[in-house]
Length: 255
Image 1 (cartoon, rainbow, N blue to C red):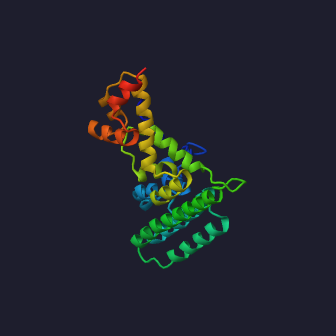
Image 2 (tube, rainbow, N blue to C red):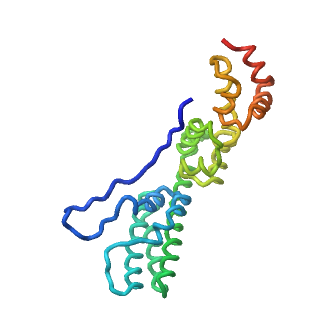
Image 3 (cartoon, rainbow, N blue to C red):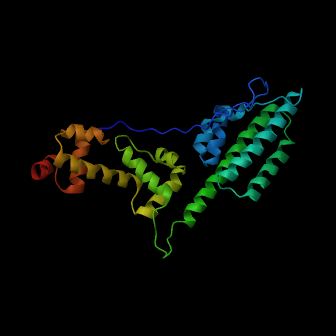
């Protein structure tokens, strides 16, 4: 069976205009939290907390706290820009940016600025996620009012089909398509009439049927290759769905 395919996205390196310039440039590594924010990916932002806390740039003041505040303003402005790229309205992003810059004035220590910086990042990310969810809800009906499969749920279905060999968790599927686990579960059921786990089970059984009919793979190879924890679990689930054991099914339909 094919090895799983993993996709990774990293932003392009922002290169200096001239090599001899000494001013700091933001690298793709430092941009990772902003890309997660743009995607409304809360888990991604949380995984980048160290990057967020260590925001750096050209020194604007000899006073450490004041310099930290200057950097906060710069980072918040960028966060607002990426939030707008992710679907947040210009007015909402601008209002939120101004709100956090105002709160920053009350910070009396570097630690307080760092804490507010993380809160700001997560707030923008949640707002982007909400914007994406609202967009999904708006597009879930076709012109005749019938339910249709949205792009995110189609992506989730594709991700499931490509990862049947693994233990599929809601948080992993959600992270892959940029939706929170709870929202993914709700939308997936509403649009497909099935839960994520039931869909994965049905896909596994459908593929197992084809392998039993048309291949020479052993039952244990099919079971492990399709993510069943054991042969007995495979037999139990297959019999529940098809009314016969895998062995009986193969004897009946093998070509």
